[in-house]
Image (tube, rainbow, N blue to C red; front, side, top):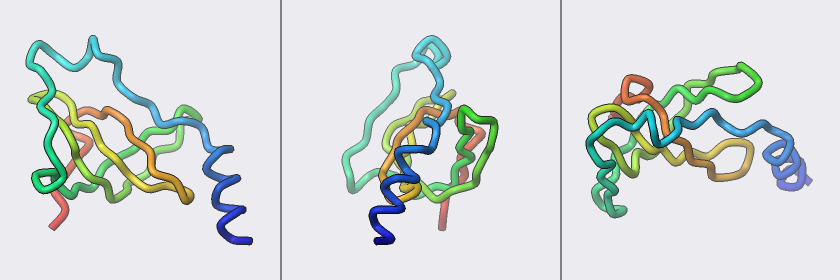
Length: 90
């Protein structure tokens, strides 16, 4: 029953705010394979205005932005955030 409730919450949760490609800057985003991805803490901004500090995995980045995968309400999501929204998780 908990898994069903988690799935419903994940579907009901608004999408995270993600930066559009125009904000990514002139340098290309470098995408990294699984073994080279970085564990991070990331501030996720939701479209309903709430921000959360969550553990995630940085899978691609450049000097301005980071693409982060994170688990929330039973589902894996991804979003592009400003680089300053992430810190390395030890």
